[in-house]
Image (cartoon, rainbow, N blue to C red):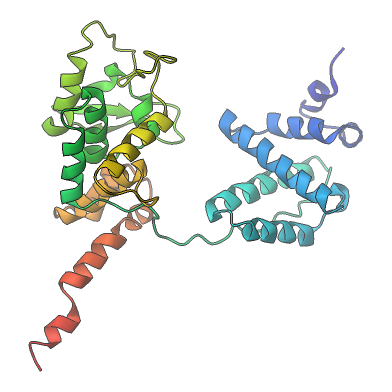
Length: 317
């Protein structure tokens, strides 16, 4: 005999069958209808549970919820001090859920006009000055070959930690006569992009791979060396911890400096070296140039201080 969920996930959903189900069952049907990645389904499930819990704590019935309750919920999230990015993910889940509820005639779409909080267009992580990047490389030079190769790669390509974790040995190849590393970017299912491996970016990797002569192409480029996960894929947390250790080692012990700071460093240093915004965009593989423009704030401030209009006036009077 088919379960309630199996019946309700068919093309036609009965309002009567939905209204007789538990909230958990309704959510499972909603999740099954979403053409998104498993990670997105997990996010929807987690954030919806938080919303239902908040409604229950206030004594609000879901069937009677209106735009007023949603706005109150949004305000509560802001008061808790959650980031605008986190709150946006909560609101997106609600919009998706209520859009579906309206389509199956369960609840009206009361989330249609609820907007995400405005996000200030700036980056929180600080980029390193060229001298600091050199100091960080020197800190890892002479330590484990793998660790030096990772930090060097991050600084010279702007890769995200997840992209480094996903890299396999066989992803190192050639395009147009240049050595590249194929990249599976954030939110992507395939390795459909690449970063250029200059000699300075590649040599530490080659030195490290020389110690793994029996390694196969499908193995992780940077495997774990921990006792519990020996040879397995290195986690993003482990990479972040590694970079943070180095940053602390050169005196940058502040929450503004993390592994993601190295991606910012790549972008800003491309501009410092005379590269264009477009070059930085291509290197960081941003689909939208407006994303790359966020990284220019530091560079513009440096230029403003170095070539101030106020200083020019002093030459005249």
